[in-house]
Length: 274
Image 1 (tube, one colour):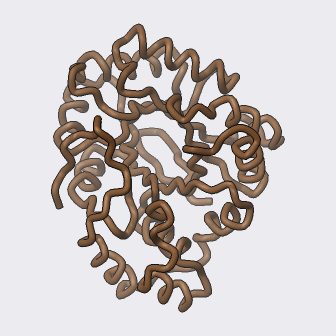
Image 2 (cartoon, rainbow, N blue to C red):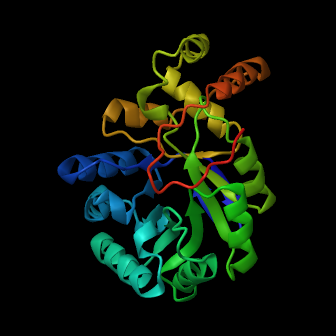
């Protein structure tokens, strides 16, 4: 496994995204992933599976300190009292005293950053989170958050795959020394079957999904693909044994023009335009 370093955080470059994984399916996926070599788990209060992530971790036999665990506080819980309750419940669900990374899952435009970011930083100061960061933040939001934060924000977790142009927000994240963590890195199943990815994959003896992950990894992005299928779990971490050529990277980069966003809920911010 390779890592991305940001402000003291060492983030395993491929993790397991667990959104929509429920009950025993989630427990078994987490257990299998960790036993296969994954060392990064991504959950959230909103996913309703923190309990199962914790169970899978304990069932795996892998030491807690060897696993990088991220959870998130939703936009409706960003006032300090609610933030603390949400985080305490997350830790109780996981049966852990701390998480490695705590994120604001989505911003709430009605709560100033001076309030929400302060609540986030407090969780690091009191030891409930080793590192803190944000998700779904635009370039403007990143600048505003950094203007008031008292702790380094180590990452911005955003939707990223070959079919979306996120150049502006990636550049802004890096300007602040942040890691970029890509959710939906296989575009929720849109990657398999895509001509360019299938063709490039065939040239390397890899799947289209592996090409999509490699495209991100090769740019220094962290990817958190979601799957509960053992064969896919295995394939998703087997992306460090090949490299895409400059021409292949350019061909995949050209697909960004599709600008297909697969996650765009009503509470989403006004996204940066390409």
